[in-house]
Length: 163
Image (cartoon, rainbow, N blue to C red; front, side, top):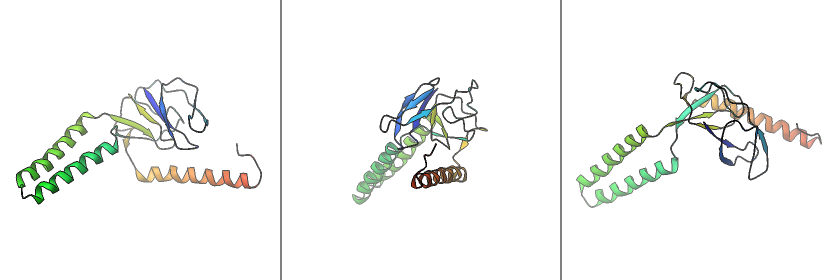
């Protein structure tokens, strides 16, 4: 299992971390993140970084590459459509859809934590435990993060030290 941590202080993605490390230090802001001990269960019941039990799965595919393929197909089909070459237009559109479908089948899943956005690669994906992304769960953790930041700012403004 490999873990990619996103720094909670500056939100900079860090390099891939092997499990078993006790802590991780951000290269950008030197923030230190304590790493929980990973579970021996290969289906990963909780996050190896923050020990949160709510995880989701997504395809381990770069979004920029997907958008580049889509834009190339759009531009190519628009040009052939403008040149009244219908066969090439349909070939480009159907070909890009087929290429996208093949990539979807070939690309593996990655398990992501809602709380810390830690990405866990090389784990056994359990469809019942690792469900697809849920916006309501994500919003709950986003609101939690905002509340913690507000408390931290309030403590700093009062001259107190946040823990």
